Length: 246
Image 1 (cartoon, rainbow, N blue to C red):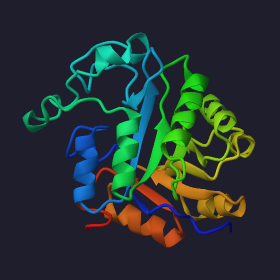
Image 2 (image 1 turned 45 degrees about the vertical axis):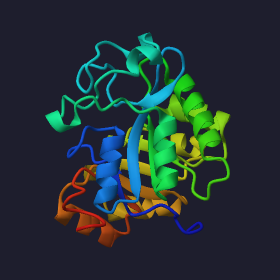
Image 3 (image 1 turned 135 degrees about the vertical axis):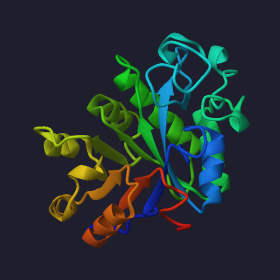
């Protein structure tokens, strides 16, 4: 096994993305309030190349806007309501820029797993820009963010733009050739759907020098089984019942 894994075992999914509007500073504050010191979030690009937090390929579900963010400048999205869809107390919560999340994490001593979440057709450039921005925002920091993606092209862009930042391949299925892709991408970790992960896969990943993480674990029995099997990280929505404050 390589050097000790520096990231906490538990990561709050999209901030505390069920108790507060996902991928907002309010969600990060909520997760920190439950004792979490590691978070997962999704980063994509506006038309003018600004990195910001959003999961979906459109603005419709989680903001007052509509359409693809890849077709809108940041100035058009900066004043959208990204909280009212969740519940009235969060009305007018804005979309955060990646830089704001970086500042929050560093001010509060929190680790971050950044899922590079490109809009279709922007895989490589999203990886490049996100990695360069992460390298700049965490320059000199003791613990850089872990960059992950389901899209190998995005991780290729991240690898080529900022090769020293750690990367992770996300898997929702064990598709043919994924180990070879992970090797080529130079990953530090593989993050799978928790249903794919078991002791045998953890051992297989560890044998390759990769860490094993899973998303999105919301059941205590599942968490206990995976921890006993040697898992390196669990991403959860249930910040109120699992993890640091449980």
